[in-house]
Length: 174
Ligand SMILES: *[C@@H]1O[C@H](CO)[C@@H](O)[C@H](O)[C@H]1NC(C)=O
Image 1 (spheres, helix red, strand yellow):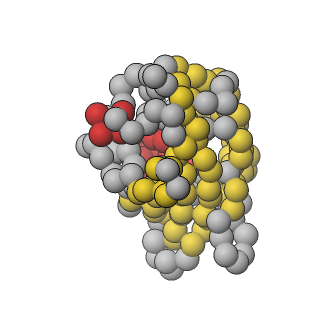
Image 2 (cartoon, helix red, strand yellow):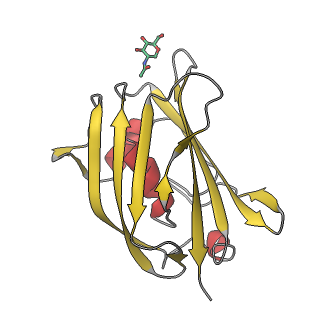
Image 3 (cartoon, helix red, strand yellow):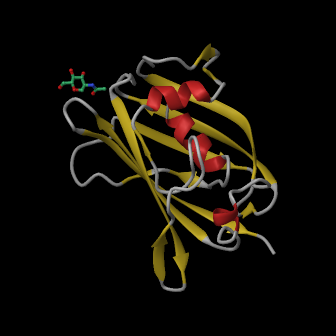
């Protein structure tokens, strides 16, 4: 499930290192680490990544996600709006994480990624990504920058924050 979100992020752009927690209190019900084939994501270009996701709670239709992406502009960070149709890219909300996941035809530990997804550790290796077809709005600002990415997962019924993850993406390009 986190994979779907990361896929959205990486589909256009990608990352290096771990997701850190941005919860003020309590522990995350989902955590993730990843490795990139490159320190700086080429724009345009291609790269690969591996991802490990640890789920401490099941993911079902009852989980929604909010993605907040900003980028470094001189000394400030500026929010990147949600652009594009369908899944979109940028600071987007995803009311149905399961639908999102099922739109990404990949397997979870050899099984089709279908909700509910049981707690456990999921590994995705050698994922291939390209930044060659970025949305024009993103393409204009995606080179030689740092993207700050925050992903929050909520329980739709209780409103509880399940997880808050942060990471940074460094990009390069002429
Ligand atoms: C969401 O909250 C409901 C009601 O408190 C609970 O029954 C359910 O197990 C929770 N789901 C997750 C994924 O935490």
